[in-house]
Amino acid sequence: MPELNRTTITRGVIVCIVAVTLAVGLFFTVRALDTPSDEEMARIEETLESFFATYDAVWPQDHYGDPVLHPEVRTAMRTEKQRSLRDTVTGELLAAEMANDRVIALEELRDAEGVVITEAGHDLLDVDYLQTTMDHTVVVRVSLSEWRQEGLWDAATSKLLPGSRTERSGVYDISVRETDAGWRIVGLRPVTEE
Image (cartoon, rainbow, N blue to C red; front, side, top):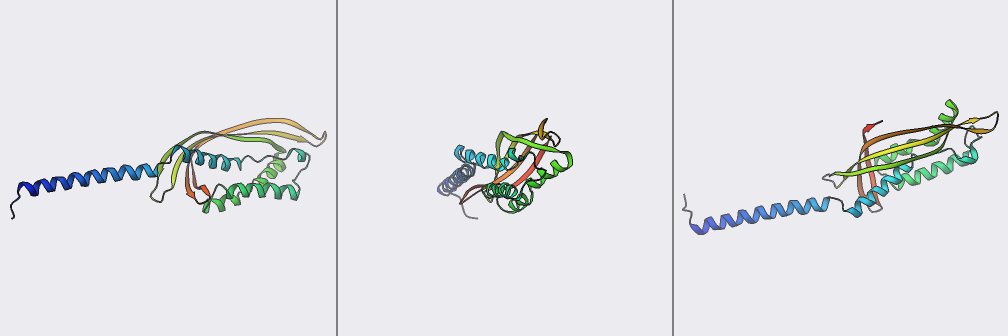
C-alpha cells in the first residue's frame, strides 16, 4: 500500500472541496434556471386567464328569444373558442378541449330547463408555482372562482325573466410549457371542486 504524504492528502482535500463547491453551485444554478421569473409567471397567468375565458360562454343578448342559435352565430362562437384554445393549449389537452363544445352545452341547458346564461366570468384567486419537471414543464396550483348569471326566457311575453347566480370554486394543478408561440397549457388536474 503506497504511503500517503502530506501533498497527496492536501490535493485530495482540495479536489473534494472543489467538487462539492461545483456540485452545490450547479444545483442552485439549474434550480434558478428552472424556476420561472416574475415576468414568466405573469405570462403564465395571462395564458391561464385566456384559457379560463373560453369557459365563459353566454347566450348572445340579441338572440335571447331564439330557442336555438342560428348556424352563423354557432360558427362564430365556436371559431372564437377554438382560436382562444389554440393560443393557450397544446398537445392532447387541446384535442380534449376542442371536443368540449360549449355552444351545445348552452343549447342543451336552454332546451332542458329554459335557462339562458346571460353573464359568466371567472377570477384567478391565486397562482402558486409548484415545480419544474425534468422536461421543463412548469406546474402551478391555481385557485379559481367561476360564476354565471342565468335568466329564464318567457316565450309568452318575449321577455327574459331574472334567474339565479351560481358560483363555484376549485383548485387545479396545471402544467404549462414554453413554446415558440408562448406559454401553453399541457395538462390540467382538478385538486378540489366545490
